[in-house]
Length: 140
Figure 1 (tube, helix red, strand yellow):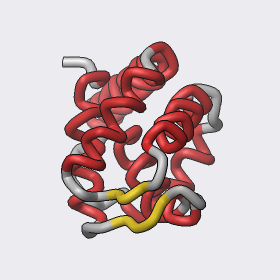
Figure 2: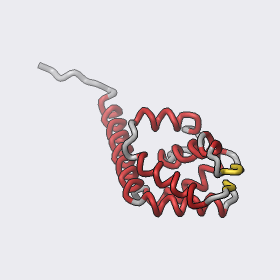
Figure 3: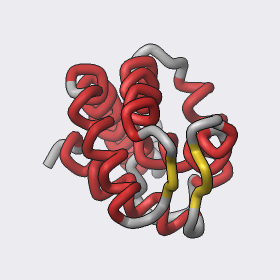
Figure 4: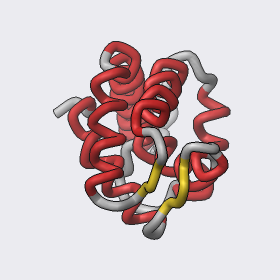
């Protein structure tokens, strides 16, 4: 019996391989977020302050907020992460999902924190500041 020819077979395998690679990268980054939450939170808050993205009354409290968020991020459902990042998903090509999540968190939720006085910059400026720290957890 002859084998049916599927012209899309190679394309489907390539797409599946890309998706699997992105999923491995996402899991790797989430594990690193969990392991290095304190250090990443400290670097992130310092970068946001240095670039005048946030203005706060208590750097320590904001650092604790990010540390808890980075720790909790590893246990979040994929749907919750995708839902949160949807508004900024097209901000940059080949975006870091962790950086997108943190960017949206800063823009949407952190601004409501009582120790945050103000947040400056557009979405892209916030993403670039966040991603400059989060590139350390991205696999090469």
